[in-house]
Image 1: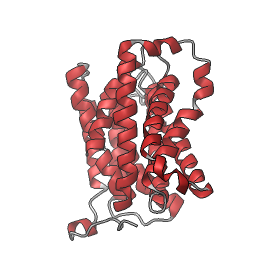
Image 2: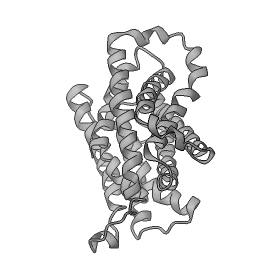
Image 3: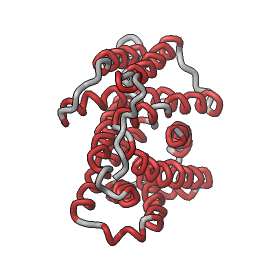
Image 4: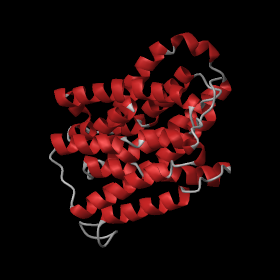
Length: 288
């Protein structure tokens, strides 16, 4: 839950830094800083780095880079609270993709949860969903692309975390994010804006707290639970993001958007009501 709180706050921080640098520069800067920190933390385990681990970390990093690139580009136009609820759609997407790609069984409420989530999305979009200022804007569509990639990332970690050392997995995927966007950063004319004090402070918070510490914690914690349960806990970031954005930025949602946001959050929770949870069984794996 602490990870979800950090990520909720990150929506507001990203929005504050974007006037100074491009979205890709921000992604590369935060992940490069996080890589340096995680390299120190994982230094003793580098001897365990093999081809299989390296390949797995590269795949996780590629998906994570795509997710954050979409999300950060989306925040150029989309307000933080709205972006957070759109991002939360990765939760009902996760079990659907797990069924489609991995053959995992769907829970009894997974399909109703997905349907409820998309009704909420329609209300967030407003009338004329794909046209006009009240509909889904380019930033919203980019944010939805990020949500899809975050769902894929959860599934990738679900496959990698049982056999990959947590610190190495965190380092490899974060380092990949720092490297993949470098060609775009080198062509960025706004790169000097990174030296602005507010931009530096934002990158420091995003790199240290929201990336190095948060992804290290997620890579370790997901060894003990399922992909779907991880998704619902992390989706609480939408609640934190909304509360922070309302206070810090003065963002306001229209009544219909509040209803849509509530339906998205309800869908997130509905999809996690499973028979094993009601019986008190722990839906996770033992540590290996």
